Length: 197
Length: 340
Image (cartoon, rainbow over all chains, first blue to last red; front, side, top):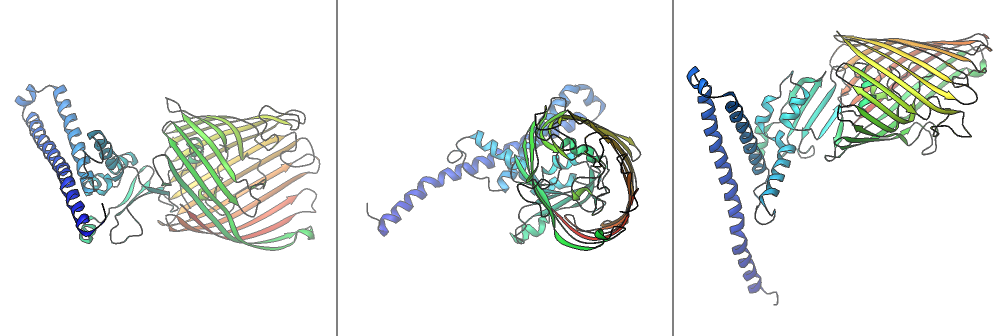
């Protein structure tokens, strides 16, 4: 077939018709999955709150059940955050086409969460002076860059940065440590970053 | 510079990994430094041939560490340029300063194999861990780098390490077990450190090197540190004996004794001052003892977390029993240190 304007238009039209439903389906699936998990989360929180209320309620709920509920709640929270992180970082790719299957999706979600959870403003709420290094890593992940500080009252500094060369689109956070605990916290400017976008 | 607890030098030797690093991926990261300085030295000696002054402006040392992490297996390779030494053939400026593999046992203990730094000594091997520009000693006899296998156990408050290596005092490098051309056959190093609480930490260690024909060499190293508020105090003493000329001298029975006292005060978030007095004595029993005292004052200013300016003044006195080579030394230095 020769490349002519009518032929090219025809190919573009066919490609649009073929691929659009796949992406749309994938995006719908992600949104539906998030909605389901959030609904489950809300339900579990309600049950947990009910279980914690009053001596009568507490007597009907065994300690094992409480632990189970708390575990499931933590898992659900983690999963929701992972999906949100993936969605916020361009994760609305097709599960059915490019990535192949749900397992790949989960791996990417975990990877994105491991590396990029510090880009979520709420993750910084747990990072305060006096908190341990382990707690910071738990909340923000391992830093892309760190340095043994040459300042006399600082042992180490964690840098959480997206790009140090792009002022308009960068996120930069910094946590300094002294004797294994947080000394100072400089949170990324999430508001300015959103405004720039 | 960095006002870290001195006992950390032993812990760092055990873990062999600094936390500061640029992460490339989950398995590889880098760290390093560039150290450059200007120095002026005046020497006034009874021996006129030693008199004079010297100026030096150069990049003293550049080091890049490759840090590998494969869960229970970690490794580190330090590539360095040191002064104007020849690379890669310079005896004191080896291109590969350290190269070792760590294997973490199930209980957290670590087995290390390769070429690594000695566990002994209060003062760090690299300028990033020093509180001044210069080191305290010229001939303390403390070991440097060696090749071997090391076992270390570390807790929050204690450290223990034992190392079997090819040499400790440069008598039998590369020949663990000995060979026909070298006198040394093996060396062993032991180290123990304990954090006593309330800012007090102590360290005791020693190294022994076997000599096949000429004789053995040993050194004992002990130091204590006390940290309170913005102050850090340290005291160290080393003594040893060599039957094979490891410590210099002209006999086969040379004693060395050295020590230091140091105080560091961080007077604000970016600056500190350090005062240090160090002493060395080498006695070979024939030509007599050579003693030296060194007084050092240094000021460290951190321009950023990874950039520091160090200014130092040192005054030294050398006293030799023959009274013909006594000397006074004055050294001024300005050092710029960049880390990454």
